[in-house]
Length: 351
Image 1 (cartoon, rainbow, N blue to C red):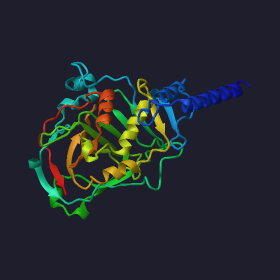
Image 2 (image 1 turned 180 degrees about the horizontal axis):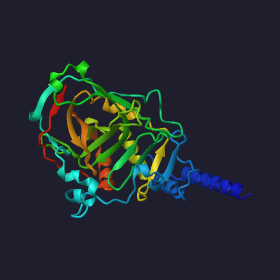
Image 3 (image 1 turned 60 degrees about the vertical axis):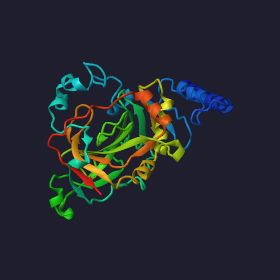
């Protein structure tokens, strides 16, 4: 039958690719043979959802961004360069972007330690839920992609609601130093996505960092427990370039995401979907730095520049290898919004 013929054809292509990949030697790129990567891209064909390729334990699928509108697309009315689409013009691109210019609590900012209103002793940031619920089943995949603005790693694409790792934090108030901690309401956020910026968007005491990772969390009607009013919280990790002589390198999860980018390099309308991405890789690295942070209010650093975002900017920096940094810069180039006015915001130094 026709369907049986198609199945045989797909199996034949898969078998041929496996044989070719096994037969190719030398020219390794981060443990992956460039020609083997090319064959994997070739197998994308019409972006068939029935093709499973990659290592068995990763179960990587490839899709186009157009197949998942929640991730956006390559088409965009704003960017980081030019008078018509660059940051200075964001507020004029669309009516819903007006706050990019009129907002009084815009991000990013230069964090000056001398501006700390108080130093508080709050619990370290800790994520829950990923240990008992590894994202390995259908409907809970994580996805790596480049949307034309930044390299991104989405949270689990839960079929109903948001089912990613959760984090509970005390609600923000400029009066925190005067309030008993047990009287401050807790807010439960759910991990949504990670976005990367080169160079970093935030500065500390005027220091410019080469790389920033922003972990976006939300609490809304779909999260568990839900929030009656949508809330956004972002954990920001700044990076310095690794010193090879000191044995420094990139976190393993970051190298893994950038390796995923190699699978779709030059075909940015696609994304890589993994059933087996382990959020624990991120938590393990970040937990070592998540006891000391700056706490402040701000906004999204991309349109629509929505305000009332709670930012947790880690005080201590992670490291990124020169190789990983160069590859990230190659993909997304300079994608940092310029610093925004400090205005009348309050910042707390935690621990």
